[in-house]
Length: 574
Image 1 (tube, rainbow, N blue to C red):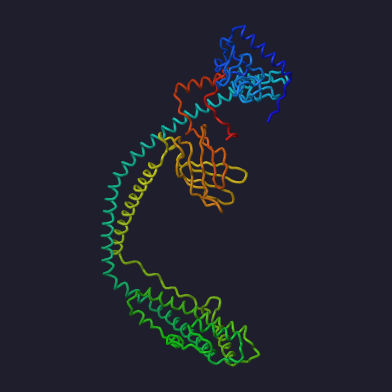
Image 2: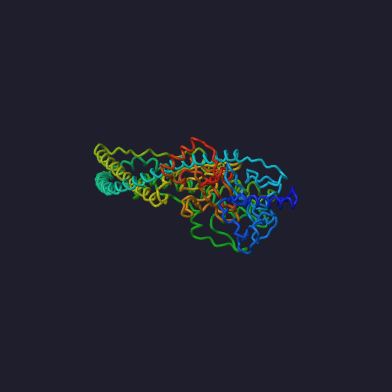
């Protein structure tokens, strides 16, 4: 709080006040007492008895007691020009700038208040406050002209936005009408193209069905040697699997259980798990018929037998190959059990059943590639590609089917595009772009704001994000706030840790360019974006705009005490 500093005694102040009052009375002027605004001068007029009533009507005092540096009225209205009451207001005329009122407690407090650029609040001489109203008024005038220029240009651009929005909305309506008419046509074209395609495919299938037996017979003859070769490989893997299973079964039945060799026991347990058998306590689980059958030799069908099936030869070959690969994986697991035991068993026990199993593993490893789970030197069998040449007649049917397929694809794509355009326009028509369509111009435009750590982005009527090392979703457009169409909400952003879903409040003020000027986070994960845009500038009449333009060109500093009608905050105040 400011401290009061009185430079002249109270008696001198009283004498000065009396002198002023007497001079005023004798001159018969209507000048109001010090600190009273000219607009309130009529409230400070004595009655015929030189008496004056406090503005709250509570007391009547001599008029010469006004500004006598003593607070007579409970509402402080008798001391507008002194700090005696401190509850009233002192009027600074500020000729050359804008008049203003300050609290009467700041009168003669030894501080030059900027609101009183004429220095009239410090009249007791304790401090000299120069009259800088001409300079301040000139600066304020330039600022007002700058603001007027922004408003005029913003108004012009806003009108462009409105015209664009209205024209665009009319175009949407026209386009939608045309697209809906076009939809009927493209649906008929797509339906007709589908019927012709189905007919062409039926003709092709009918022809191919007639030549199917011949083609399959030729293919069977072509694949017979490959089927025989793959069948022999299947026989080999079946026999190898049975061989390893028998070796492990013999180990299980004959190893010396008194040795308590953990590696051997783990191998046996692993074998039981693979075969689906095991023990409960000391009692061995009875082997199922399937387990016994698995250890017996298996003879797959011969190539001739395979070719007698209903499957195509290509499918038969794939089935034989898949079965071989599956059994090879099982062989790999069985062999891994024996190899694992070989590296970990207790050599001091000299168990014959264990040594026999290890010898079998060593012998098998000569021909088996452990890393690939396949026999060494055995390359995959690649069958020849089926000849697709069905002759000139078939090619004719195929050419017709391809042509109809292409026509149907084109018709379907055109129908999809038309329907997608209709959905897109209908979606845009549901968006509230303001009563005059101003914000159509800004639809889908994106803006960025960079601070020290983050880059913030916002796409109008789309979504908002925060970017650093990664991107955080702050929300998508949900609604307007209020009826002035200058504030939007973007909600449903990524949930804060131990907090709410992120959201953005976009506040727009008048400007000549579209730009985000500040980003703040007043509450946890609730962001406030401030933006300047012509879209919220007031639409001025052409006459007003021309007058303001002329005023701006003249750049005459104001001398009036009238407050400016419009206040525009600077960017650093936003």
